[in-house]
Length: 276
Image (tube, rainbow, N blue to C red; front, top):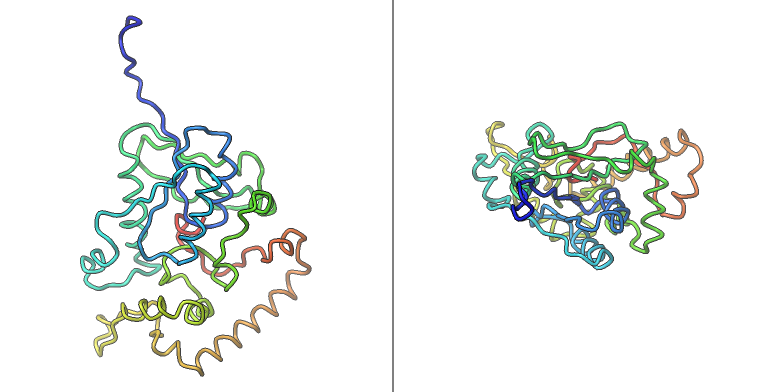
């Protein structure tokens, strides 16, 4: 190869997929000055929490670089029809596959890619790792020993702070009708964003045929969950659960007090590409 012959070695792209959650946001802030050609992307279902969009706009301004919004070629309503009205669930997460993973892999294409994943040093999980051979996943927080407290410090020092949906009790980012929400989170969605609760309720199908009944909460349609007596019962159970949990875990860490939150509990977890 002469000096005038163009290089045939493909470039390596650096991509950080964001969810609007605290960990991927902290990682984006952490990597901002470490990787100059980083591409920040967000798989937008068009069904995200209102606060998620607001938060990403603030983060984008801080990064000084556009967060590329990846929109699926066909949105949630299209895929709902394809799946015969079968709402996604923990046992059939077609929403994650068709609206998050697939758009990301299409964006990546076939060039060599380093994918930055925001799993912390104190977490024992893997996260989404593509099986595409051209994608190499790296975990900067694990490599650099950054734990929950470290993530809190990054967010506080930047001035970005925690995702605003945490203030009203939602534990993770993602679609407003995410099936991983606990009953108390559905109640808080109703109280905070009644329009999104109504929209979620309209997706449910209640029939006499059990095989054709689809609800977000197993065994409880949102029309029942929103009843005053049900809300009161959910709040009582939640308060009892929190009281027991606080007694068992001891005092809060200083970083939790400053951040206005507690470390994650052992409740149901959202799909990692949505939660990080």
